Image (cartoon, rainbow, N blue to C red; front, side, top):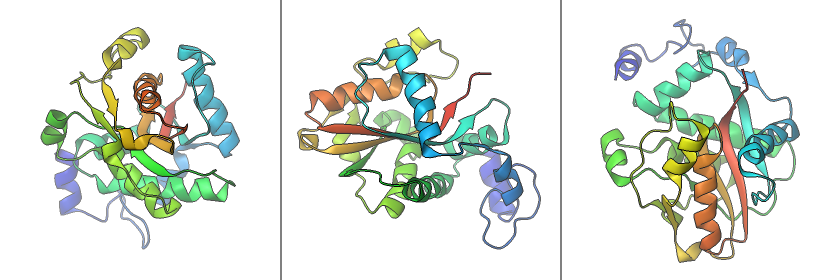
Length: 230
């Protein structure tokens, strides 16, 4: 709540450097955003995203396309901003990040025949505690750019899971196995599955498995960032 309170009191101050924002800037100044570790192209981003997933789940992972905007580093400005988005109540950051990601996806070329955007869901108890789902906010921003509907009800988290933070790759996989359930209405669709940060891909993999069991035709992935190997 500290960042949320600070930003309510000083809404025109950058979350990272605390300097005054200029006209057109929101939450984070242009200088700090340039310091985020951007991917140079969507193909470079997709290659790293695919490598991260296949290194843990093998080549059988059914991925049509994949997009992410940044490499995630610990103790970086991006980590600070994403933490504020996820835990400090600044949910509008998610919409802003999603819109930026969607604009970048379109600028990089054809995104394929995506039918709908599906955010990784929170368990209902965790959503009550947090009051919002950051992945849903990112999906809403993507929808504004891509002109495709957000279908949050296509995927639900049927089992409560502990936070993935601090867990090993094996623990992450066990924590999310069987955690999701897809609606029948997902059958035959090309879904863009959305999360905030991809670490090992365990959460995405569990969601993808549920969507496959629900009869989805194609699955593409989008995330704000993928964790870089330090």
